Amino acid sequence: MYRPTLLPTSAQNEQFAGVTYHLDGELVPVLTVELAPQSSIYFEHHILLWKHPSITIDLKSMKGAFKRMMAGMQIFVTQATGPGQIAFSRDGAGHIFAIHMYRGAEIHVREHQFLAATGNIDYTFERVRGVANMLFGGTGFFIDKFHVVEGEGILWLHGYGNVFEKTLAPNEQIDVEPGGWLYKEPSVRMETNVQRLSVGLFAGMNLITNRFTGPGRVGIQSMYLHMPTET
Image (cartoon, one colour):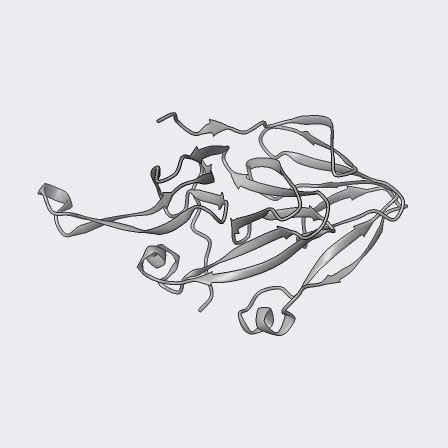
């Protein structure tokens, strides 16, 4: 079993799905995207760093708006349309990286770590409850689901610390601290693993991890973070 691999921390003139982008910086990295005329991307609110005046900004409605509103999730994201360059960063040390996705591909991402995506990627969500999430106040948390309907697309995510990826073989497993996993492919099963510590000073305590079973990819962030979750 090989250990998880560090994802690239920089990119210059990277091209995919008709989009050119750059990843610069180390402690608080910046994503810069070059948009052709009429091409667009959508992104999370409050991450815009700078843009060319030729870039048009508006709101993009999300599917299942009522369901999202009832769950306390955002029902709009911000959309940028070219031509021009636009740059994003998150207010926190971390690692920005791109996932190149082909038609039919889907990625599941923990909440609050989405940065931006090309316009042809659908964005839905699922709420996860249970003992595995007691570190989130016992109320559970949301998993964002990104799916490419047509063509190719790019999903940009932000991880805290550095981001590593592990590709699990069929039935291969890895246990990850609940705040440490960042994304997974739908083929990877996630479940709770609770170990009772009953010896010495740790008697009566539980060690809780999320167990992932392959096949498929799992992303792990080195600075695991427990985001506050509303009831």
